Structure formats: structure tokens, C-alpha cells
Image (tube, rainbow, N blue to C red; front, side, top):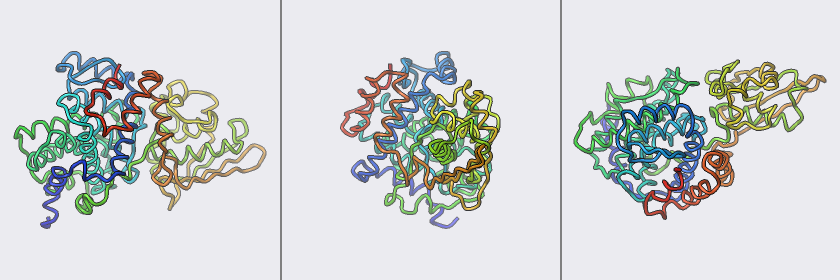
Length: 448
């Protein structure tokens, strides 16, 4: 390692320890609040999923005292279990925020750890915003430093880098000094969570929940003097060099504190892998131009290679598998005219009209096609051809969701679970979060 490379962890810890709320640019504060609102919506929306019930059963048998609420529910669990459960819940629908360069979902492992600490140990809303912002920044920069090699070999990068974000954000909430933060980073480096083999199962959303829990635990014990390597990221046998064949330390420390990777975070309009979004946009465009299950002969979508790699399930048998099937998504878009959580139900993936379109759909991996771009072509039974082109998928940085669209998404997820009053209160609090004294009002609005 060069001298600069050997100081990556130290420089990151220094940035975290000394960044204050007043150091955050207004646009970073705004996106932090949007990220937290989006995160809370997807967490509450999936709060009654079977996998959440299973973890709550375990917590009731072996967990600690009820310190923190489970969003969207009445139960209270210990702070570590809350980070795990709320983190997992927020990733179940695959509807959480996404850093498009690395496909990291940063809020899922970071927000639940920060909010667990805020409810358990206390802290102002400005503390929450600051801790979340620096945690996300660290998580995304570490991801940039090893992407794509780390991801391509099979690691689920949301979990493996999310544990750093959780540890760092938790350390910030706890007011740790540089030394304790370096220890927390080292502990996080020793606990990478997640492999891509688990995509399409309950274990995929478990990854960011576990990262949230492990990061929070790391920060707590580091603050009590539990030591670790102080070069957990960059050492020869550290995180980056063991888990990736590519490591660029300047992605972590270069422009740190001057440019914010957090501003490249995006919000999903559809509850599935972000690489399918341009295809869904394109299929909806075909429908608007008159394509139906009854008049379509064949559909070809010209896409980035990751669409085939990540979402190539041809015959999904469950709703969860449907989230990883570009073919199902095209079928739902053409038949239903929308692709929301309802279209990923176990029964819905077996609808004859959806399968009819799905079986007529092919994808063509296309050189030079960006991940957020798609061209689609439908040949109809009358011999005509209909095309649609999506330059930038909805929800991308170039075509972002507005506040109104984000609120509508939130309401669609939360109102069926908690009702209009709770949904309205959470939106109001999140939009003005920096003015809240603590999380008392937020927890009351987000739990039952």
C-alpha cells in the first residue's frame, strides 16, 4: 500500500467524527429526508410479511426488553432486533432507494440502526439527519471502491457495504471519537453479509437487516473499547482486498466532504430490481400505444446485460420470484397498465393473461445500452410493429420522482396498513424533520 492508501479508514473516521449538521449542504439535508420518508414507507408497507412474523417470533422467545418499535406494528423489541426487523422489512418489497451506479440500497441497513438508537438512547432530529448522511456517504463510497468486481463475483453489495454505513452512522449518533469509529469500521469489515444466490428468497431482505444489526452492535462495543484493525477497509487482508479483485481507495477519500455521493441516490417507482424499471416504462409505453395481450404476437426488449443476469427468471412461481423476472414485469405492464406490489402476488404471477404476454417476450442484450435505458418492439397479429424508447427510466437521477410522486408511493404503501391519519402524520414529520426535538412524534405516527 502507498501512504495514501494506508490512511483510508483513518480519513473516513476523521470525516465522520468532525462533520456536523451545519456542514451538510441544503440539498443533502433535503435528500436525506426524502430517503428516510421513502424508507419508512417501504418498511411499513411490508410490516406484516410472513418473514417479519418469523423474526418477531424469535425475538419474543430469545430477545431482550422492548426498547424500540417495529414500524407498522404494535410490537416492541430490543434495539438490535429492531434494526434487524425494520431493516429487513424495508427491503422485502425491493422498493427501497437505490444508488444506481452500484445498485446499493443504502437506507435499508442504515436508517433502522440510526432510528433504533434515536428511540432507545435519544438524540435530536438533526443528529439523525447528520448520522444518516455520513453513514450513507461512507457506504456508497466504499461500494464505489470495489464495484463492479465485488458484486460480479456474487456478493450482495447492499449487505456487505451496508454494515459499514450502519456502523458509521451509529457511531455518529453515539458521538464517538475517531479512534472508536476506526474500531467500528474494522468490526464492520469483519462482518460482510449477503450473497446473490439468495435473491428471490426471504434471505435477500434479511441481508440489509443483518447489516443494520451488525453495524449497530459494532458501534456500541467499539465505544466501550472493543478494538479491531485500524485499517479494516484497505489492509492487504482487509475488506476490499479480500472480497474484491478491484480496489480504488480514491473512490472513498477523494472529494470526501466536498462532493456527496448521497445525491446520486434514487427512488423506485416499481417494487422490483431497478434494472427492470426501464423495461417496465417501455412496456407501459407499448400499452399506451395500443398493445394488448390479445393483439401482441411477440415482444423484444433491447437491454443492458444485467437485465438478463439479474432478472432472467422465465417462469416465476411466486410473487417474490416475479420481482426477478423481466418477462413477468412486461406481462403485468401490458395486461394491468401498472406494476405495483399487487402485481407481485403469488396468485398474480399465475394469471393466464400475464403468462400469455410473458411467453411471447424475449430480451436482447445490447452492446452500449445503459442500465437505465431500454428500447422495446412489439409485433402485432395484424402484421404491424409498435416501438417505444426509454432514454432514462423513471426514478433515475435524470428523471427523478417528484415529492408528489414520492408521497403518492408512500400513501399507497402505508394507508392499507395504518390508515390515512398515520400516513399524513409521517409525511408531515419527515418533510420537516430537522425541526423535531426527537423521534417521539415520528415513532407515534409510524407504529400502531
